[in-house]
Length: 133
Image 1 (cartoon, rainbow, N blue to C red):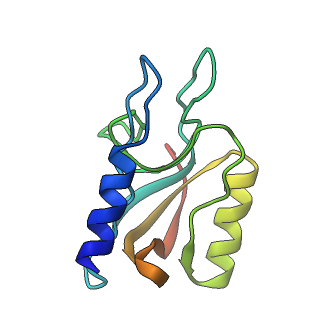
Image 2: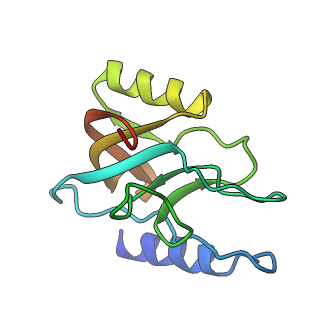
């Protein structure tokens, strides 16, 4: 598993980054016993003049509940990427996918856990509510 995560991190680090863009950190799973934390998923509130732009993401909110390019865990740069792999209550998962598709943002308690083939999944413990309310 360590080798697979190392390979994934190395591959992510080798991807070209457009000029004036900051690459998000790779989405890496914690141990499946890691504590949940507050995350936001969906609309980042980041506005760009042109694509690629991290308009939707899973991110750790800053002290104001906002996203910035340094706290993104999973990013949709072109508006076509689906929500990340999700594990949790089926109603919560459905609500998150709907919010993602409608470009809204939800605050959740959750964590990244190892999934199949060492691909991280977002474990959703509960939906807190809309972001920044």
